[in-house]
Image (cartoon, rainbow, N blue to C red; front, side, top):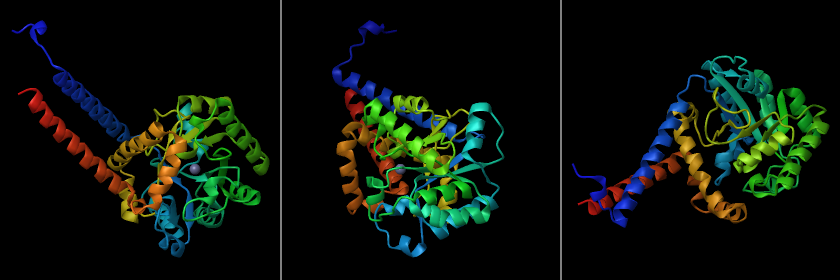
Length: 343
Ligand SMILES: [Zn+2]
């Protein structure tokens, strides 16, 4: 047997072995994600932004095809969930389950809206009330901030009266910060201000406690989540393209976006563990550009990409295709280099 000391590896061979190590690590992480998504105790936490009339949706070309759903589509999804044995739960029930293991009904679904746009009141609230379905809206308090004045569809924030009407009508109101900017890139004092001030304002508007927070832009790190606790929140929602389960922290409740371009069949498929796991991998990759470039450089670039011809094509099936092709190319390239390095 050849002693280890006698094996001499060159820089190319070491790099190839290190890259294979990395590939195996990535495969391990992906396998873990697939196993997590297959857990029996999964909770589907769905994230919507805007619900618009069908004729308005038909005119969308850019990113609004992802961030809005038509009212008809939304109603069809609610009915499909009800008809297929899913049970709608409140954020309070989700948090009680995660913190105290208070049992949940079978196949639980938690509905949420981020931003607090006007259509949550005018379109979603009536559809939810008719069906007696609870939901939560996370409101950004500054009505003049960019989120209400950007994209191809400028939808204003709900008025204080509409916010109160949502809360009294069955859509719980909680916070989505003041200005909808990346909290992980602010000073801790500024981030804390976003959390405390929005909590204070919303509590005043709805005359009730505001206990939950949803991270704007999904830009967060462990320090951000700690600050949420410091600001007095009991739980935090993120959007990592994943489902939540019994092992999830109440300070990182994972949701995934329901894209407006889905038909009901695609909606059904998108709730399956395999599909959510794939979505979670894509969501992880989506976090890389803002992490590398920083919010200030990434957000204008993101807006330009959405406005370009590529914009409407940046949906989940296309991103999945791109990742599969890139992964396959990397694998073939690495295989070829391995044969060269170890002839
Ligand atoms: Zn948002």
